[in-house]
Length: 306
Ligand SMILES: [Zn+2]
Image: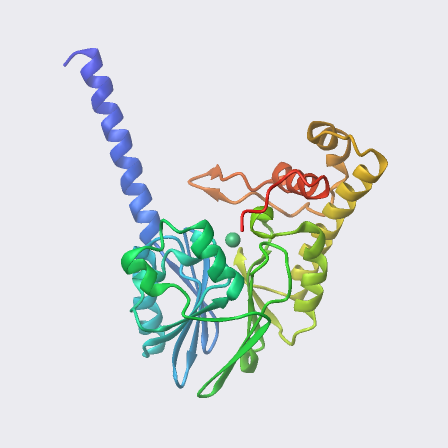
């Protein structure tokens, strides 16, 4: 075999290995039992939460791929012994919604009105034909409650932050909060300014969340935790906004490069925070990203998309 043939063969092997790795990663789901009736499923794309009720199974978020959605449904029904009756989407991002088509059409799918609007406006190509059957079929703007046998499930839109349509879920009897991406535990958050997200509003939004009654906290990304970690995250978002806001107050002409250079190091409440990685590679949600988004919001250097 000549040199070039060997190279091509090596490349094919490399690509095949990566495809298999990707396929296995997507299919691998890790299960954590949080309490008697609550499980968290972790996989590529973050956290999914399962609640067992007398009236059936509740699922919060569906990850990134239809195949993951189908596996989540299977695992959820295995864990509870009951069919999924309610699927909740905390916001419109694909890593929380593209698994929806893996569920049975006809089940109740709930989100805020803004989330449904974002799905249709910003992700229209995906939500066509069969996928459209698993779009949210019930929406609300501020607050919504389900009584499912022995469980009360409260959904609240606490305000803008990650987008302008996020909801949080409280499993009342279990005193457990599911935050979606309004809280990244020990990871730098995505800040979707184009979908109404806001660093400046995020602190008050978390105050709204903290006024709810709960002990355990299941974030959109990262480990299950408690109120204290949520407060720590709020402190980081508050400091981030103060840094950007003060810098531009002092000099309205400050460019992004100057801002990062002269003010970036002031952010010190993120000591325990890390970029989210896939296959060892950062997906861009890092310190520079959050500083950039704060500068963009403060200087209005972005465009609302919906
Ligand atoms: Zn998100």
